[in-house]
Image 1 (cartoon, rainbow, N blue to C red):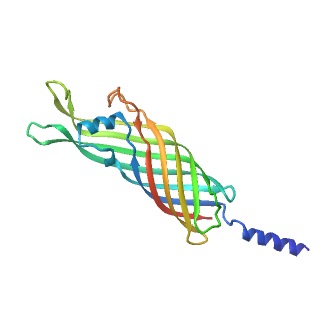
Image 2 (image 1 turned 120 degrees about the vertical axis):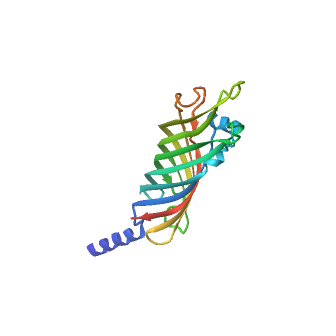
Image 3 (image 1 turned 45 degrees about the vertical axis):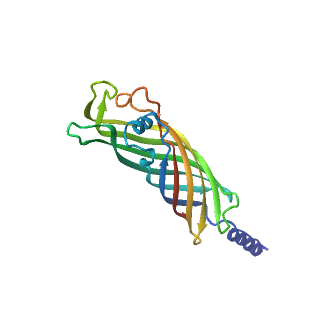
Length: 226
């Protein structure tokens, strides 16, 4: 009888999920939403478009499976992009263009809850998720700026405007995992995060509203179960 019970427990263990944790690595492409006063002004006065800040990102995360349908974990991501913009209305005295560089960097550190509606023991594993996080960011503009552009005496200065911060936000995501072995899956994911950061009034117009850090992201990668 004892041998029968031991055998039954062994069979149940084999039939159930064999893994309780996973690590994943994603390569993605970010699409900043750019709903900010500073972006609107740049679009009006220069060649800038928010889509110029689209760029590559990378993510790494860890999940602990609570059961067949839910997991909790954390992740960290990194995104950085810069673009050169040209003034639409003014040039230097020698008729050369007036340029400056816009740079945006965002590093989300997030807590995640994932739901797997059909579980993990299927050929294609869909999941939904979301959570909260802290978003470190940097925004800067460097180069030549036209001052008093709406006055009779505009002039050009060379300068550097910079702001950064750590701000709270939230995110939502959806994706699929396709097992390629007992220990690994291929992943594809869409995610959206939402956060805002206050610009430094010593570098930027105090009348500007917060910098919109919100972004959409599409990613592919791998996860490893253990």
